[in-house]
Every structure is written in structure tokens, then in C-alpha cells.
Image (cartoon, rainbow, N blue to C red; front, top):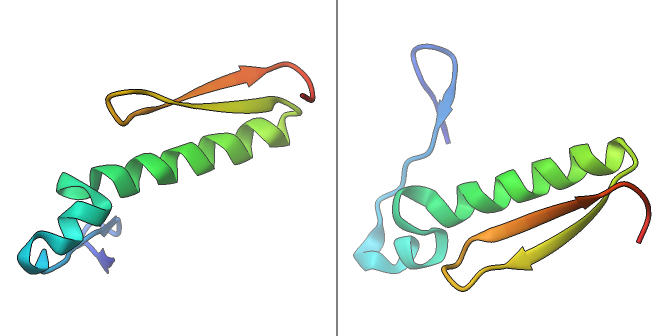
Length: 70
């Protein structure tokens, strides 16, 4: 992670022979998706919602928010 001129942070890697891309996804897609899942889950739980995580066939993760504890 490195700081950009505008103050935001960006991700960089050397993509060593495709090994890194296999783990984090093209353009960090898997990594960014999992960050979003964890952030959304934490925020939902702060509001008292239960969260179900449903993996999809295409590799995406669907979150279902429920208005109470499971």
C-alpha cells in the first residue's frame, strides 16, 4: 500500500509470475471484495443486524442482512 499525491492509498505489487494475482485476483479484485465484505459486515453488526454470507458460483459473495440475531 502506498500513499497517492491526493492523500488516498493505492495498492501495488510486482505480480511475481502470476502467483500474487492468483491469490488476490486481477487488479486486487478478490482482496478488495473481501475488504468490502468485512467492512459491510462490521457496520451491519454495529447496527444490530445479523449477516449471512452466501458465496456465489461466479466467485462473488452475496451478503444478506437480517434485522435481528440469527
